[in-house]
Length: 394
Ligand SMILES: Cc1ncc(COP(=O)(O)O)c(C=O)c1O
Image (cartoon, rainbow, N blue to C red; front, side):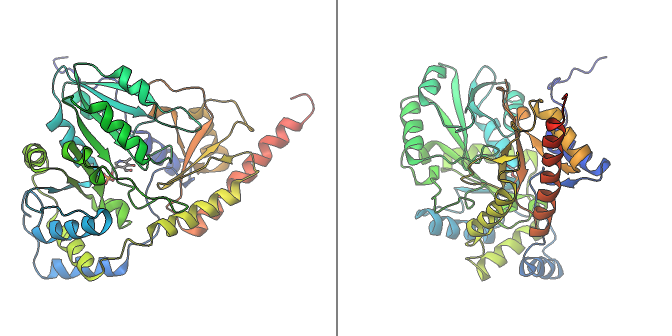
């Protein structure tokens, strides 16, 4: 065979695999992170309007100025900082493209990038396609805290990039101001760029505040901060995200972006810009909205044997099935699909070397009836497991 794979060990992502299995088994899919409820009808109306107005040709490579200006207004409101739409903001195909472009811009052959496990699955393949290598540091369950001493030990002359994600998928933890300070101290006087995956910037619970690299005086000078309208506007299928970075970093990112996707669907950009201009606070209720969903699902599961872990943010809720089974998470997840008819996401695919753990990830970005019905199926399954265990001779 003349063709040599550049990513021979990379298969289909666990999200696609579990969604496919859910469809095959006719299971309720609370695995993959997407809402099952409609977008704001005013956003849908804005899209219809801009299409009818003829906003249907190529958008500028860096994004429409209307959208970039709205992004700057939003950033000023959230992070009390002024950004320049011409030099600091690039609109991309979801947060995923921002991550990919930033990785290609920041590192090359022979370089090392530090990422934290359990890690979102797009980081490592993008690092490898850049010719670089990932050093993976585990955030150990159940607390999933950063170990900055370990990070310092992992730094080498080749380290050029550190990727952090807060609020973190799938651990549902959030970075503190101390974490950002520790990160800044680690990379001070070293040629290291940061990518901050902040796509869940508005989904923090129990009064927590998001600590963005954009608010950190040292980190913002050397960071690509990545955001997603998919998450903020409940429109994951629109695939609109953006990257915020200082001008010299943005310039390099755009060199990749312009030959990757060139530009993002223009009607979607005009529609989001119009929507944000008319309803600048549209995203304000997100934390309360998702907190209610977290409380509903975790309240229904607590005591069932599928024990919810504390969740500080994101679209997700981890549950520990140790009381029901010691199976590995891949086979337990497959059993949930077959027997409970509920699809979840196992955690081990997020690790280079999964620790022993009995955790699966549920998505809370679902209608109340979906969450109730998933919880009913899961608690019935858990009762069956416990009943089977209680039988004599088992
Ligand atoms: C941590 C994290 N980063 C990035 C992304 C990608 O965002 P987008 O759907 O905007 O590409 C996701 C999506 O699930 C995510 O969970």
